[in-house]
Image 1 (cartoon, each protein chain N blue to C red):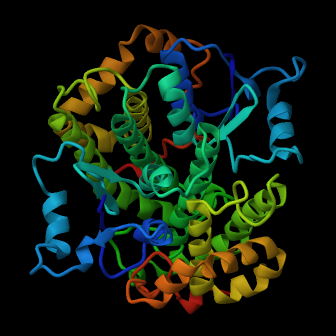
Image 2 (cartoon, rainbow over the protein chains, first blue to last red):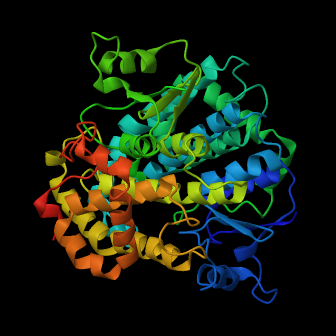
Length: 242
Length: 242
């Protein structure tokens, strides 16, 4: 199966959580909107699909994944679909629901990270909501980041199969997402993270363990990994990191 | 199976999406935090579970559902678990992922509805973020509500099995959630909804179809249905509805 991933070409964004799973598994996939329009792909192909009047199972927004004739939207839902196929989840319904539950909690964190620079609306530029962003980012860095990191650190401490991975004794897709969150928070809030990280040794070790995976290591060095930038979810605005 | 639902006792909130599914199915369930502490339940029981140092699969926040020894968190994940058990989803993986995808899009809408009165932070009172709320609610009512309603109305139009329900030709749990969203938006933004609703006849008909279900009708009249109020997700602040 060759998977087709559709996502905005210039940012890591929510698409990155799917990319990391596909890369770790060595899956056969194409990042459609980043390919050339001459090849029939690119943004034009993505817009064509989103605007197709025949598509009954229309996604609300990118990312979405095409797998054969199936079109699947919502990041956590895509990972729910891919998990068993890429062997990135344990067996059994209860464990899979648990991995998915953590992915949804990460999705909440990601939305809050986005809203730290866009608290008023996505249709406005950051420059149009700077004072509000300053207040929201203060709450995010002071209250919310520690609350989320406390939670995930506690889960690692309590994992009955050891503290290397969030679920069981093997990497699952949620560990890749956790790595991405830590990398993103470091990019957006370096001072905050420098202050907080000593309290989260297991999460930092998890981050490093993911970076050391051979396929992830190769991916992070490749051109397929778009660098963090200030168009994405995690943005480095100094005035929001105090 | 007797399900135990754990959620804040004074509001509909996110717990309501689970309650509606349990009620429509006539399931055997107990709304733990709303029961008396004398009976061993109430808020004390909820806090006991959330603070239990032995619980490895700890939920981040209510609602969560106890089903035997399994504790399941994240609203959409609870519905993913309950759907097949309550016969509130079609058969087949692809259809179930599609229902779940829509539920996750509703979850995004619900977060935005919440943030329309709490754009800065959950730890602050509404009164501490009124100017920001006014700006965010303007964006929500002018841009975001129409965008979400356009999307769901289009899905009803395109459903190959007819426009009565969002997926297939039978009610699924996401229809119950769609009803709840429309009811909530009407409570919070009556002027906005009065203006918008003529453009969404299929969604309004879906809302009415859910209200007419015998078990939902009985539930909505019962004391089990907590009235909308200004502690919940959907809040009626006149200054935010213009």
